[in-house]
Image (cartoon, rainbow, N blue to C red):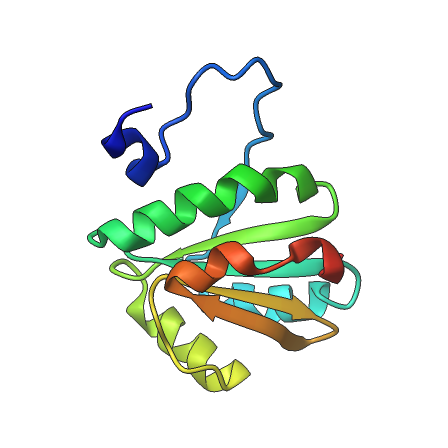
Length: 131
């Protein structure tokens, strides 16, 4: 594996089964925040705030997707593209009292953010402890 492949996380033939994909639900409307908050009482909800113009955000998202797909049956995943919905990003920061960063991961359970991370710390969030 070359240096660029290691840095960019390019997948190669490894002889193991491929990771399950993350099924993102696009977060595009303010009313969805109410729905996500209410749904968090039944199922853990994840919001990923992504910047399409940021290389770090793209790499963090790809790395997150490699492991998060295994939890797609237990956790609901929402993707917010910052450039398209800055107002929603600001609303999330205000509503859940979490300073805006990008990339950023928020995990909601029982109507509250139980953990959040940004940049390279996203990869260290143990989602399986919140299912």
